[in-house]
Image (tube, rainbow, N blue to C red; front, side):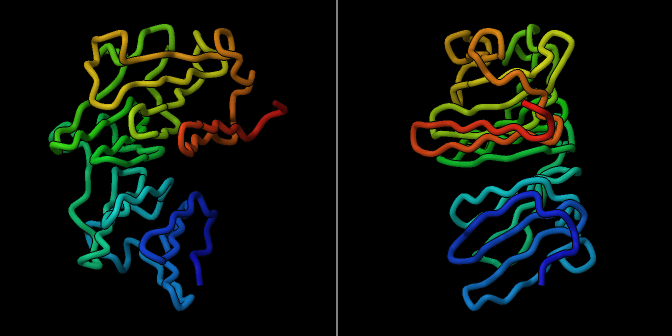
Amino acid sequence: GIPDAPVTDIARMAGANWISTDGGGVARQDAEGLWRIFNVANAGQNFLSDDCRALAEDGDILWIATNLGLSLYSRESNAFLPPITTAGGRLPNPQVQDVAVGGGYVIAATAQGVAERLPDNTWVPHRRSTFSWDNSTGTDFARAVGFDGTWWWVMLAVSGEQPYGSLVRRRAGGDREDPATVDIFTAGNAGLPASTGAGGVSIRVEGREMFLSYCGDEQ
């Protein structure tokens, strides 16, 4: 069966269904309908945490956002690979809230900014201090992320400056200091819902459309 814990995300990779949970690790359902649970007790030291927030698959690799970094499952080797953490400056913070992948890019939303892995395997940090978005957002806490193959979208948390948060769009691989590579959308300038999304926010990209959903308040 599946872990006895709240489900946080669902992904499909090579005919198998995966779920992530808040406190129970992840589980995989194979083509025959059988479930297998992976957690810190049985998956080895490369499995960072049972607090798994989001999933993203990119061919052979399943990326798992956790409170301690990114766990990586390889379908080819049927094993967890060395994780991505704050070591070497790859992540600005271990608390990964969401992850998106595609075209050789990996975008991780963390509690202190975004980490972007380029196709050459270089990790680039994004936050206000790197000029990736301006101070009008009031925060670097990234709650959700999506990627359309050209632009990545990140929802920043509420702040004193933006009581309903900010939606940032950046061109993947773009110069952090080039204003042409970034746009900022808010309830005031773009008509985003006047909602704090206290129960969570999510970003989903399908083709040329981006869907932003909120949960947890009257809006």
